Amino acid sequence: MQIAILGPGAIGSTFAFQLARAGHDVTVVARNARLAQLQRDGAVVLASGDRAPVRVTAALDEGVPYDLVLVTVLAPQVAEILPALARSAARTVMFMFNTFGPLEPLRDAVGAARFAFGFPGGVFALLRNGVLAPQIRAGTTVGEASWARVFSDAGIPTVVDADMHSWLRTHAALVVPLMAASVLVVRRGAGLTWREATRHADALAAGLRLVRDLGNTLRPPVIAALSRLSGFVVTALLWGLSRTKVLRDLGALGPAEARMLIDMMSAAAPGRTAALQAIRP
Figure (spheres, one colour):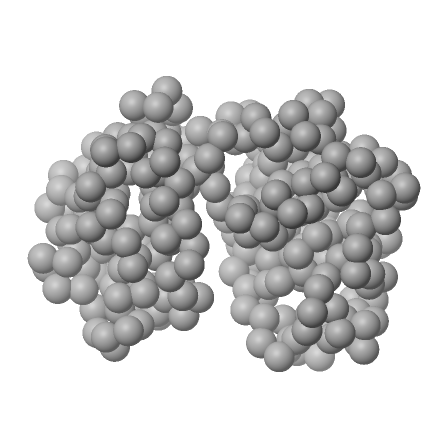
């Protein structure tokens, strides 16, 4: 397949590497320092020294009928590239990023027949000085079985959820307290106090309740089970997690994404997100 990836940061670069290694013709569209790095290397380079050659460009060629354009930029950056995506001859445009907002504007811009959404839930990667260190586990989710097969065959285990809007909103409600806690842990160099863990548990409960109140279902079902745990149990889980390397690594990514998601949730339900605002990093 011909595949273009917009936003070759840690996540986009991981997909570029795996898809190129699987034999697809991969073009990465980059800017600034990442563009220069990729142009020099002509490949996505891993910390192990492994390389996957890719085409590199500064702008999406709108005339190329890509089988897939995979958009892995941050949600606030999408508006800038949406006109080019709308004009693109691509057969499928898949957006892949954290969001709590409505998906209809994206679907309308590229057309319902071409629109797809996914989330790289199993991809954990760091990009430092142009060198990628990925960890790939199960957990990536997309809305269409055909793309789940393509990604799985490329070494990114992927499952299907037909209601990606509910999935994304549930995921946002789940990760916001974890992100906020991780930032606090990194800044202080120590785990959460019990009171802090309680506050973050309250934010998790408020976020999941908001998802339901907006008419979405909690997906996957394991999150619905989590929502039924007592506040004490959730507090204990967060208290324990705050002392793990996983959360410290998450905190190293900074507060921007947690702030963005909390602001999206507040915009979706004004006046109903006090518990989330209380943990905004």
